[in-house]
Image 1 (cartoon, helix red, strand yellow):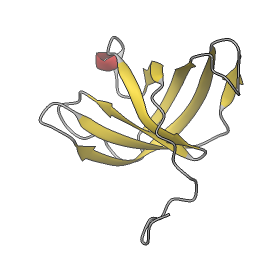
Image 2 (cartoon, one colour):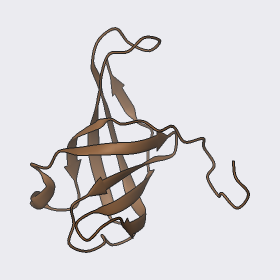
Image 3 (cartoon, helix red, strand yellow):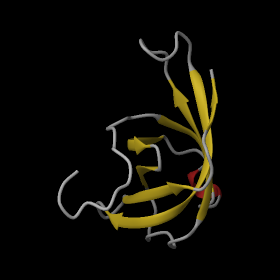
Image 4 (cartoon, one colour):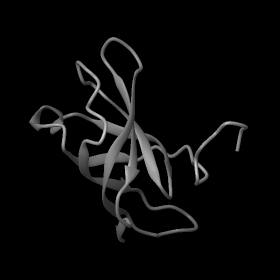
Length: 109
């Protein structure tokens, strides 16, 4: 990890489709959302929100996991919950959201 990096877990640039995201209200239910990186303690993704979400906002989510060599021969789903720990504007239409997981993830393959 880089000097000054406070992460406890190693990040992996992992693009997984967010199949369900609850906590920001119904406006994002139909959006096509993807993670940009994931680690054992949390994830980062971008959302089209007009303003930054409140820190500590509680979220629940499901991520689609495609089949892949080395972990599963079939598609699966990761379910979890977390809280917003950081939000940064990426553009005038997108906000980057960092989520810390608040309980162990549930894997269904």
